[in-house]
Length: 614
Image (tube, rainbow, N blue to C red):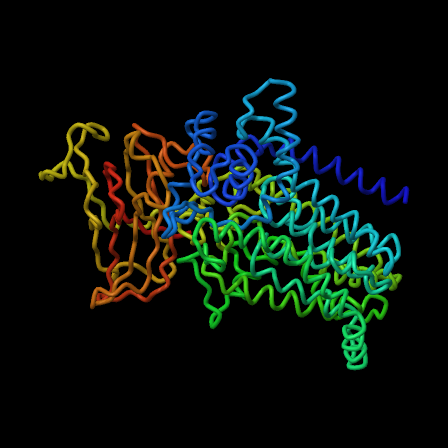
């Protein structure tokens, strides 16, 4: 018990220090998205009493911070039903688990009178933002007790250290306030209760198992498949399956208690849906569907766009450990394999399979209480081999350093896993600051050359606007005293179009412009900003290659941050490279254009295409 307590306190201290250093909590509920969506349930129900309207809740937020995001403006956030009531699409489970922390923050604020007791001031942000860390630590405490019954202390500690430091559980415990940290605890609790139930079945344990599954379900509806875990626990042969059927027959009354426990949290969600919509069963995610015929499991696990095993590689060994022969923990084998398989199939059939934010797939966090047994099995197998017993420590050290460092990179705007690519990953791997090459790789999703080692082969084409005259030419905003092109309401403007017969296969092509943007044109979503697009076209004007970059993020971006939208009222160059991989042909052309679907107003000068060689 002393070792367990010491381990718990050390991890808790490390997490708390990380929470303070990462310092994201002041804005946790001001940026919109899932975090605000879960939390507004709490504020509305416990403070303002405006469920189905939310105007008082949001007035409290905007009084605290006029610049905060209002989720009512997000078509995927708060919408109206046919009854005229507003509803929050996010389910209630996370809000239920945040509620005790809200009450602590509210009591503190009322007692100290140091801040407004409005649900949105500093004490609320700080204390409620601690809830993921607290729940993760409680989950770790429960898992320690479970693992230690199947593995020795060394394997138990290293396995749990791996979860807490070498997976994106660290990111979700210290950096975000979302459902997954809470689900990590809920699944840990479910495993702990299930283990106790099959040792000594009681009605109360059955009730709490059902309650756990119910709470898991209203955290994320697809997680209702968690019911398979207590059903399949300990089933590892046909004989066990027959014994389980007999057990169910013998203890069916306890299963009724479990069903009652399940209904209690579920009734909260159904009551809310009925209140806002008039329907007992309601789809709050309308327009955000699933394609069960084409699940993106391979991309979800291996893509550089937030792929689980790309950004959390230590869990490769957790999966491998499932195949390690170890009779001592085979009770967990079938539920782990079945649940993880179904969980992946369902979640990666979702249309937004990259799951922003996450540093690796966030839905996989709730699988860790099960997969930690596979990781422990893998470590245990190596510990039994004298020549290999050092390998688990090496795996843990490398993966922990990588995970913690990449969490810091995310905070600093050096990486963005959800918008990643292989070229961007390579450019930023191990970097402590962004570079022009990493910004280019991020925007274009294209490998960039070492520009300092390139030499200009030929200026293929260039265009200034000092000899042109039209209502699209401006003399007011100029670079070096020459006129500029105004780009505003045109969806596409062609800048350059040249044949490629003078370009050799393997040449590097640099494309770019100078651009200027005014202050009011940098508002809103960066995804809606104008693109500089380069295309290789065939003789039918069908593109056979297309690369693009956002233009304004390059302007005044001194740190090359991927979060930068642009610095107003100054000129800057937006440019990138691609490698020409075709054979020269008069039937091919390169076209440089600006695509401006959302009418951002920018000024452009000095468009060019250049070829380079090493």
